[in-house]
Image 1 (tube, each protein chain N blue to C red):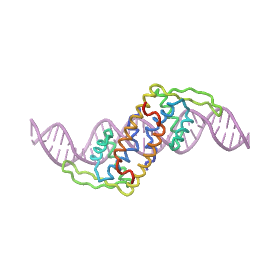
Image 2 (cartoon, rainbow over the protein chains, first blue to last red):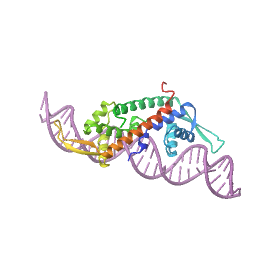
Image 3 (cartoon, helix red, strand yellow):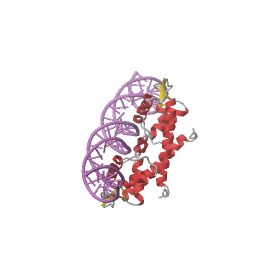
Image 4 (tube, each protein chain N blue to C red):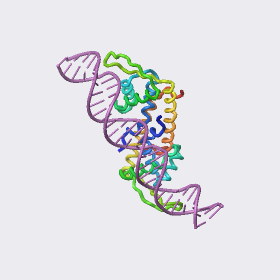
Length: 110
Length: 110
DNA sequence: CCCAACTAACTTGTATGACAAGGTATGTGA
DNA sequence: TCACATACCTTGTCATACAAGTTAGTTGGG
């Protein structure tokens, strides 16, 4: 019915910003890192359009660089706008988490 | 850009199940309770279709009862399928939260 | 040399679900 | 009579996750 993909909506964008925040990263790498963090395999059909969108909206800038292993990589870096958006995301995320926690407080064990 | 509505995707369904779990409730009441819990005003255009969907999918059953204040209310109650779905939701929710937490661990203060 | 496998990015089409806007109807109080 | 709160529902729109497929570069094995 409603698999986890709906739960991910909106969350992924913020998480990707956070991955890039530390140091610039390219799409393929980002999807690996998310998988490491425990996210269930995020499809490429998800990640690349999302990155393009973020770039178009000015949250990311990109530069191409050659790869020693394959075609050139497109490295993304956060803009100032991206930093702001990341902070906004995290604030809203924490807010949502605390709402849900409040609702489930008292009977999580069951 | 991406307001909180995308963050809510999928979460709302589980939260509504949780609200109903304790005791049967009707739509109007549920939206009040969510607002109490801190959720930003959940629109009726969201809540009623969602309840109908859950009923159609067998997670909820409904009975109409008169109201002392207005038109009759449609009271929803969890089915066994609904209980299972609620548990599933909560498990997946906790999993997502811990993934995001892992990603943001170390620099939440900023 | 060719082919498989991995790396790397992108496109198209589909489904889901939140929401705005609007409609219908009942009860209360001024 | 009229405004307002209660109560439910429908239609249409938008954002976004994903499957599946496309294009390309590199490496290593047969």
